[in-house]
Length: 172
Image 1 (tube, helix red, strand yellow):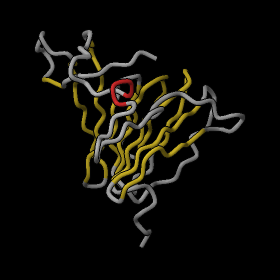
Image 2 (cartoon, rainbow, N blue to C red):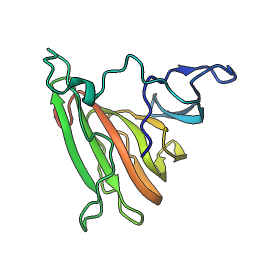
Image 3 (tube, rainbow, N blue to C red):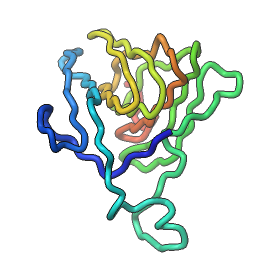
Image 4 (spheres, rainbow, N blue to C red):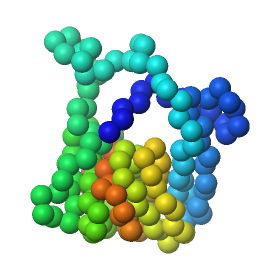
């Protein structure tokens, strides 16, 4: 997997953008699910970026490197794999992996979530529509919305951020 750091998002059409993206809103139950589709990526600079290699042995109060987040992990015979890497009251971060031909069997969550596709190709389906996702795609799904990844044509690795932390809200 190619790692990129120090990327910025700027309006489509600016030639000097390190990352250009188009935002396609999909209306869903008075809230909007948003897919950000990647376009061209320029080589990103690593200067000034704190990495795990730079932090080893250092004391950094309040900051934490979440190693392994978003990296592909084979589910070991299961239909998919979920690993939670970080949990604090206001958010949690994990990696969700679905192999080619695997099944996304999740149910709607009580928390908002953001998916960042780090590897693979698939299609996300919601009541408001469907969209292809590729590495670099960012998808927002509001709490309570049905959603599934289908047509997984390449092993899919997703960095997932829940707000607040996964499972912290009760289903009233």
